[in-house]
Image 1: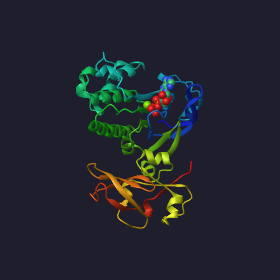
Image 2: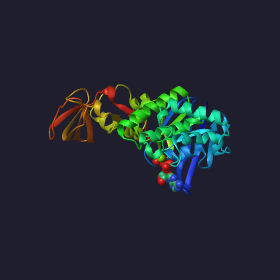
Image 3: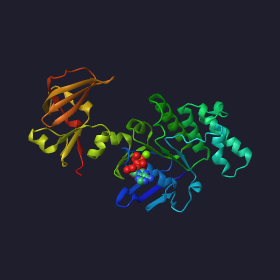
Image 4: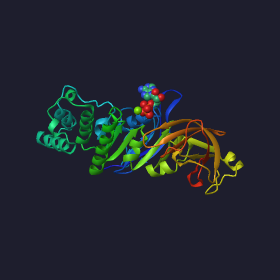
Length: 333
Ligand SMILES: Nc1ncnc2c1ncn2[C@@H]1O[C@H](COP(=O)(O)OP(=O)(O)O)[C@@H](O)[C@H]1O
Ligand SMILES: [Mg+2]
């Protein structure tokens, strides 16, 4: 079991281009923490620094209080799963799973028992004699997870492990990861750019932007109370309103607003008049399965409005209502 303390971590591949910029983050013992952020924001770089695949340039990483900068990769006892399954193609599933155990110089019986146990809890027992090329993508990723778990790691690092799987398998596998993580109570960092995936399984989410953590919170709090415009945009708020403009229209707020910018989710804007109104014209309407989305042109820009029932049509002039309880204040940046 382990907790991880990352303090003032900075990293550059090239001079003058900081990929991580004094990033600090604590991960609790047994927690599943997701790092969520757009492609290129430095997620993989951070995991590589933790795992020891690249050396630390500045800052410290402590695991259970111990600075790991000088500990070689194989002694860190971390399990890693990557987007590409990275199985050894010439070895059977059983051999893939025992590989890391053999390097730990355990006796043959212990290795076999550990491998069979992990095959059992990951549901792979019947595939143990196959070659990786004889498995589907989902099964290969399951093997890769089993291989990471076999060494009984103190920390599990997952770098977009589901990105190469189709939608249905992604959901199955994320539930599987969640189940195993809870069963084994392993401190886990799960990197993803997919919001739903991360909200579904995480204890806490660290939203990353430009090499720093922009917000660290539970999935519920991030969803309900994004702190910055970046976070709000990333999780689909889409509509932004300046406080100055809203005040000029005598809009009502449920509390005093000190920031300059407000946001509201597309599903919280109502069609029809109410306490905070704005006129607009529907420029497109899309049926998206469990909701309709209207793109509405207004004096403050193009807004997105989602409703469960079909409430308008393209080219219609409509009044929108912005209920005060749904207006979220953002921090000035
Ligand atoms: N080995 C490398 N050499 C130079 N630049 C790199 C290297 N690896 C990653 N980068 C750059 O660092 C930035 C962050 O990359 P990465 O950590 O892979 O982001 P993410 O995993 O969030 O997509 C990107 O701009 C990427 O191009
Ligand atoms: Mg990456």
